[in-house]
Amino acid sequence: MKKLLYILFHRSVLIGLSIIAQIAVLALLILHSASNFYWLFVFLSIVAALAIIGSRMEPGYKIAWLLLVLPFPVLGGAFFLMVGGGYVPKRTRRRMQGLLEKSAAALRDDFKAEDLAFLGGDAARQASYLERIAACPTYSNTETRYFSLGDEAFPRMLEQLEKAEHYIFLEYFIIRPGVFWDAVLEVLERKAAQGVDVRVIYDDMGCMFSLPRTYDETLRAKGIRCQVFNRFLPVMTLRLNNRDHRKLMIIDGTVGFTGGINLSDEYINRQERFGHWKDSVIELDGDAVWSMTVMFLSMWEECRGGRENWSAFRPPAAPVRPWTGYVQPYTDTPLDGEPVAQTVYLNLIYSARRYIYITTPYLVIDTATNTALCTAAKSGVDVRIITPHIPDKRYVFQVTRAHYPPLLEAGVRIYEYTPGFIHAKNFVVDDRFATVGTVNLDYRSLFLHFEDGVWMCDTPCVAEIRRDFERTMERSELYPLNRFRHLRPLEQLYRSVLRIFAPLM
Image (cartoon, rainbow, N blue to C red; front, side, top):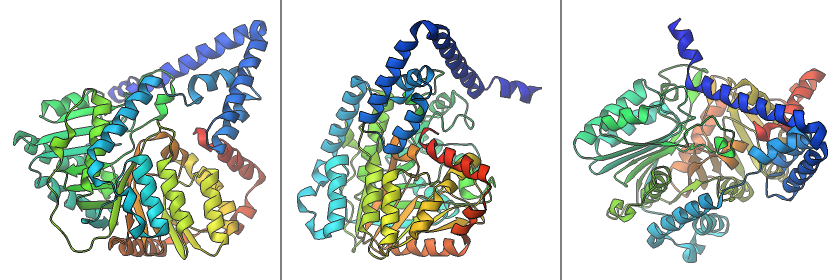
């Protein structure tokens, strides 16, 4: 009975029921007045359709919304105008622009946009784009260390947290009590008691089923400063889609971690949910971590409001190291209309001359990415992608497989990781470029979430990322094109519908 009551009164159930009630009331009001105001609703749907066609939305979004708005002018148009238009209030735009300018000012001394030609054509263009548009500088003098599993990164993260003397910043989509988080929390409590500035940001929707609603107060009682990103409220707004999907662990501005893992036991294989969990983490040690620190501080200021002096957190210049290659931590926000993560991926695809290897948990790609991958494969580039064989979300798994046929027909080789679920978001190209981060190859990551990653050029760990891909490929199954020819007609239709409406999922 207690378990049943807990489920019935869980905030996710209450919020879900509230949103369903809002939709029902809206539908009843519209349908009740449709006979009197039918032509008004038709007019609104025409306005919505014109807004969709003339917008800067990705073509897949346009098609999906038009297929809802045009056949259902009464409900479709009203629903789009409420939650689908992508409108960002002026106040939000001004605040985000202010944070971007403050970030650029904090990083001003690190920019090299006028002197990046030494990297060579493709690399220089990529680095210049991230510096000029995303305010993300290019760094050398930064060691990189790649972890092919969360299991391997876990002890290293604890080791580095123990060394913190000034501050620890954590920003994660999911935090779930267990072996991983409990070990991290024990260090955070102890460090906070020693006077270290410990701050945590977590996404409210990401932690909907793993943390109590008042968990931020629990952390504050332990001396840990905490902010909850975008409290999930029972109101239909576009901001429901904007989640903080970033994963950042920063120690004293000199050591930083990012990648696919959240602070939950399945990410380190202490709990089995979907077979073996394959993920990746990149550790930075050196000057580039300041850029990650600024990312965190900007999000902290966005959540908390108010202003503080970021320069007080800047560490002294890191000791000069032997050759480390170039690294560029980058971040992406859905509120500025600039698809930074998508552009990074597209630049990597178009820069490939010999091969491009990709690992991704979801393959729900937009038109531009699909075209780029197919063009690369048709041009003779060895394009290989590894996705999971055991899904975490069955409908997304079906959508992922629905995107296979055009890629396979173009010569892309797709493998499914048979031991379980692969959650790593990695690209490696021509033994020279790589990126590791939080950005899935799906619409939500590319266009709706706050994300981050690290672009690398000529770093020693690029070779390790390639070796990890090859080892993972040996444990994966090549997906044959002819398997689609044996699907039943209804299953083919089902996948086609899923693919059309994938941008709205």
